[in-house]
Amino acid sequence: MPRPRHQEHPMFAYELHRLNHAELVREAAAQRLSRQAAASFSTARGLRRLGRRSGGQDAEGRVSDGGRSRFVRAA
Image (cartoon, rainbow, N blue to C red; front, side, top):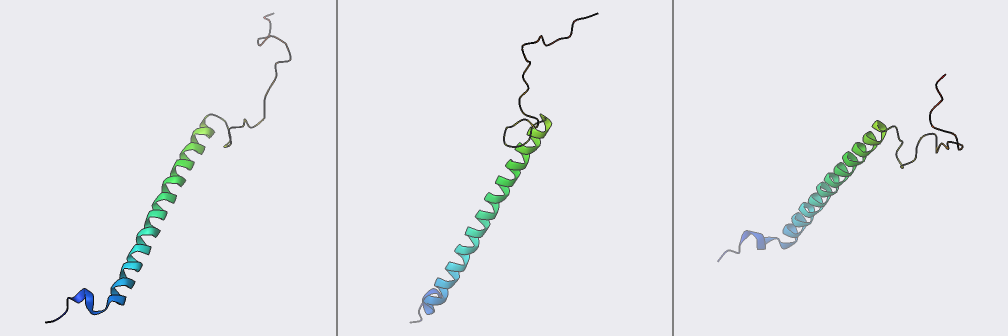
């Protein structure tokens, strides 16, 4: 009685399984990196629209009013 095909060369089948697994791991990592890059780009673009740099800091730093009124008096 002939043996099933997958039992003819168990080492060959194992190597094919390892190659397939490694490829799936690489694809998952690439998709994860792609999603992270897209999210990072989206966040950076949103901060630029608000006039801020990434990192949450204003470009020029904090401005203090020095105790004066915000508006200039009308003449």
